[in-house]
Image 1 (cartoon, helix red, strand yellow):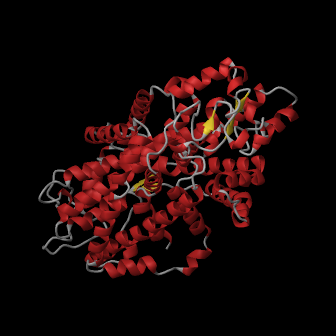
Image 2 (cartoon, one colour):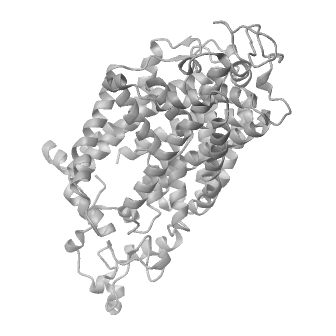
Image 3 (tube, one colour):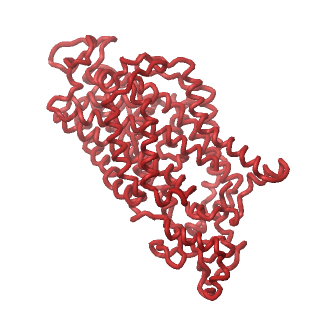
Length: 585
């Protein structure tokens, strides 16, 4: 385990006046220098690689030549920090508040009333392979919105079929079981072109329109993160705040629509019987888990750019509060429109949206916007909001991977960040090509259900066991106290040691015992797709047992000694020089 107690200074040579010191190449934490400048051997986030004042005469004798070269390397590859505290908070909030808050949370309400690091990187790649495709859909909609009449309001387009029924028209029309709305056919037959695919077994060709859209998305992503958090920290001032302005406008507009009260009543009225169902609690836990985003490596990556004594406790409470309130408000934005649609169709709210997930945005909500006054304006700002929401999370997800690799191989990539980021972006682009095919929506659904969910839950469970059981809750709380000045209370200790691991295990077991039976539009996924989904999910998780096996093989001693050493936190002298900043997480 690559962890070390923060208060292990007692095992090292003493320093005078709490200054930073180093003996035999081992680093100690001291008082952070303002703005973390690299002066007199100061490296990252308050750590130093030179002796304390008073020992200047012995400088050349106390620092080995190898260590001196490392100090020089630290000068060349100085680790950057956030320009402002608000840059960090907006980046974390922008990561937590994403497309899932707008469509997944309302849908859940609608429906129910070491080796670990490699696994995280693979999961992040899977997410980048389909998450950005959803933004490409939104960009296609945004481009299509710059017209007097939105194209998904008419049944007279080349992609429409005889079943297209525009019940918002002035003509008397009858809505039947086989009827499809103009918005549904625009999404399925024009944007996705899913009718040109026979399913997972025959995805068809690549949509060049979506390919161009996603190229533009990745271009924006690259120039937003290529220079690190100094750049992305400024971009999130726009991408993290703009969605709240749009949500406010859409909320006011939705509340004035006919039938909006029906949607709000459906949203707020509890179904007490549902509380007795296990699935409701699993969905609730999974929603808040994936919304806040622990286990993806993003929060660790962002936190590593903070000062050592940053108040992460306060940041966690602020981010969680803002995230939950955003989900709650987004529910009103969505359900006022669902109530309006139910009023227009003369149906119950529960019958309005036939498909969940992105369809809630790209069919139901898009259709409602198209039939509002000033529909073009509302369509433009709505899809622009979706893109900014997605960009925040993509910035964060890729930054988690980039930070992990650069920190692991600083001598290779620290001075070549722009090229490495370009390589990551190009890799993600090629990885997303399969989701840009005519049947790409089927792949997106499969990856969403199997590639990320169970794998991330398993990774976080292992992280919790490793930190709170093997590293030790006592040592962990001691580290927190050294950083924040106070120790976590008994409530947090019980949650970390028992409640969180057991609940995660419960969710994982529930998923394994009852794998989701996938269906998208009129397509039922074949049984072999479940096996494929498990294989994709396992491909990321397999890094953990593989790395464990590797460590057992290379560790000397008997098998029992190898096991004991493997679950024992390493001493400071065993931690690589370049990994010291990770203690600030």
